[in-house]
Length: 351
Image (cartoon, rainbow, N blue to C red; front, top):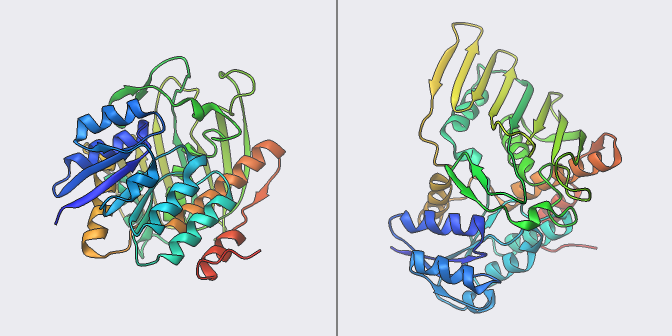
C-alpha cells in the first residue's frame, strides 16, 4: 500500500521531512503548501508533488497523512484542520509556543483518537540514545539520580549554519531569533533534551534557569542558557543547548543507583558495579529516516506512535517553565494542569 502524504510548511524542516519521506519505499509525497509559493514549487519539483495555494485546498486531496512544519507559533490551526479532515498528523516540534495552543491540539487529537498523531523528537530514534534508554530502564540500573544533556550549536542570523547531524549548511529561519514567537533555544532546541531526559528519567517537577543574550543583537532571544532540573522522583539534571559555541559538541549522560551511561558524540560509555567500562561507537545516526519511517509504520500497522501529542505538550510545560525561570530569575514549578485537562475531558477544553 502506498501512503500518500502532504507537507504544510516547506522551509528548513518541512523540506527535510519531504526529502526523507521521498526516499522511503511505499511513500508518495503528493502535495505541498508554503506561504511563499516559490519554496513550495522548488520542493515539489524535487519530490514530484503538486503545489497548493492554501493548506485548506491541500487537505481536500486524497492523502493519508500530513506533516505540519510551519513555524512553531503557527501550528495550532493547521494541526486541528489536518485532524478534522480525517488525516494522520505528524507535527514538527515544538508542539506550540503556548500551553493554550498546545491544549487545543491535544484536545483535537483526543476527539480524533482513531487517527495517528505524533510530535517529531528525533533524538529518541538515535541508536545511541535508544541504547541509553534500554540501559537506564533495565532492572539492574536502579533509580536515576542525575542526568545531563549539553548539545552545543552556533547560530548566527547573518551566516549559513553547519548542521552536524545532517552534514550540510543551511540558512537559519529568521523567526528563530524572535523572542515573542520562538522564545529561543531554551524553549525550542532545549525541548529535545527535556523530552529525552524525561523519557529516560521520568517527569520533571521544577526548573531553575540562567542565561542571556550574548552574541545576538539586543532584543533577540537568549542565545546561551543552562537549566537545572529536579525530577519528580527526586533526581536532578541539567540541560544546555547554547547557540554561541563555535566548537559543536554533544554529551548526554545518566547516573543511576548502580550504573552510569554517557553518549559522548556518538560513543556510548557504560559502567556498572560489576565490571569494566564498556565502549560502543555508533556511526549510523540518520534519526530522521527512523523517525519518519516509524510514523509511516504506525499508520500501516495501526500502532501508537512513540511520541504522542500529550508527550509534546508535557515537554512544552517544561519549556514554558524554563523560559519563565530565565525571565524571572527564580525556580519555577512545571504546571501540567492544562495537559491533564486536555486529556481527561475527552477533547473538550473547559473554561
